[in-house]
Amino acid sequence: MGIFMIYTLYFLRKSYIGIDRNILRDLRNLEDYIRKDNYDKDLELAEFDLIAKTLKDKNQKLREKDSFIKTSLAAISHDMKTPLTVINTNLSLIKVTEPKNQERISKIKGESEKISSYIDDLMEVAGGFIDEIQLEKISFSVFMENLKAHLSLFEDMKEEKINILNKINSKDDFYINIDKNRFDKALNQLLTNAFEHKKRSVWLEVMAKNEKIIITVADDGAGFDEKSLRDGKKLFYTDNYGRTSGKGTGMGLFIANSYISAMGGALVLANENGGRAKICLDIGEDKHGK
Image (cartoon, rainbow, N blue to C red; front, side):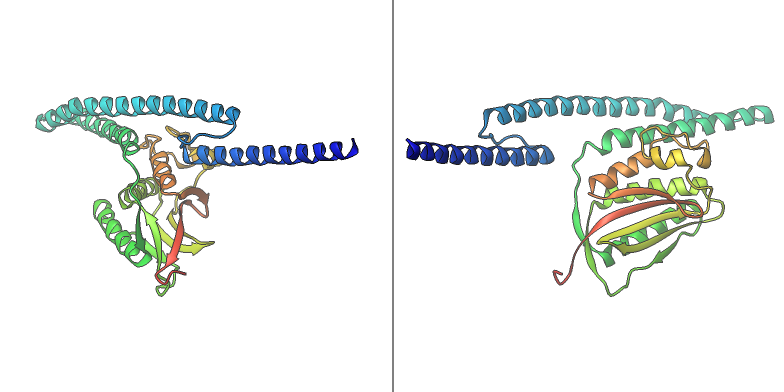
């Protein structure tokens, strides 16, 4: 009888160990599915498999809803753009002789330009995130060449110089995974924000720290207030008392943050004698595979 009990306990223990292993394995798999948003593979335990299928259905509905919102927003923005173009065209054709009417026309043009900028941002939000991210592996030296070329175009548009302070040794050439188109758009948003709030100058700082490349867009303006440091990257946030220009749509930092996050990076807002928007991107291996 004693031997029978010992064998029974032994096999029960083995059975429970096997169940525990299955539970742990399915939990790890479920965690991996959630992280990758892929629930196609079945799980061994029925309870976990049911959870996975429920999550898959829920995610599918969320994706469909998200796609509908983005598509609708893009269509509305496009439809708004057409009559605005007609208004601007006709305004430019109107010949006004009275100073009072000239002032009125000037105000209408100014507000029309604000609406146009707002619609452009809406179209960016709607259309920009529908396309898949296209990461490419480029060396730091090529990245800096592209950065300088892009800044040159922005300088021509603003008719102002943007200095670059590069704190990375020119001999250190490593790789960065980046979507150039989205990076340029994110940088444009940050530069526009900096120019709106500067006193005299805007500049860039480039450095490497903790296996990341950090591109800081800096200005000598009032900086971000506490609420803006916390909420400035949210969509339509404009309640920035420390950096109010009356020109923003509340979408610029949101767009920049979304693009940078999609590349696996992070956008950090900070104050250091003015406003700082820091783009942090992971550094890949160098050309020698180190």
